[in-house]
Length: 232
Image 1: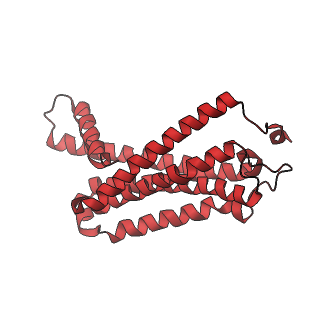
Image 2 (image 1 turned 30 degrees about the vertical axis):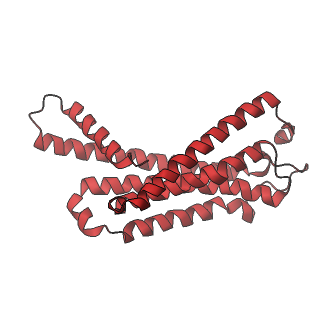
């Protein structure tokens, strides 16, 4: 029973440092993403199809600051003692992190589409496309995140406490790692490699006289990233 060896309390010094850091991160996350959402709704010119993905990402991260981080602090302290409440809080952590990652993946794919086929993108993409993609990502996040609530967990611990590894099944955590971290990371890497190749092809066609094409590509990619993520 390796996980039953976990202490019921955490040293006060480590506990205070950890909680202070988490509170700071939560406040910064809430303030930053609140302003993103406020700006999005304040200025109609920003309500483009692409920026709806940024809105979804901001909402997910706002919920992380409001709910997930406070819940993580409670779980760090072994609370709540009720098993069902413990499962729900840990599942919500998984849900919100998954929603944030899938929103980022959707945004990355959208940017690749806009760069690789700009004319087709302008003709085909309207607000319905991001709405469908965002709803799909949130539905998947809910289904994936709430799996432990419906039975995929380690069962009620012997002691009335709530430590993450004592209630979450390691097979589920492996599943989460593959589905919400490994595969999305691979998708983002592959898509950005395709973006790089697309930009490089356009640069070689239109700026073949430029003495340092790789430098120019890097500048364009940096400008592209700043342009489409500056709202964050």
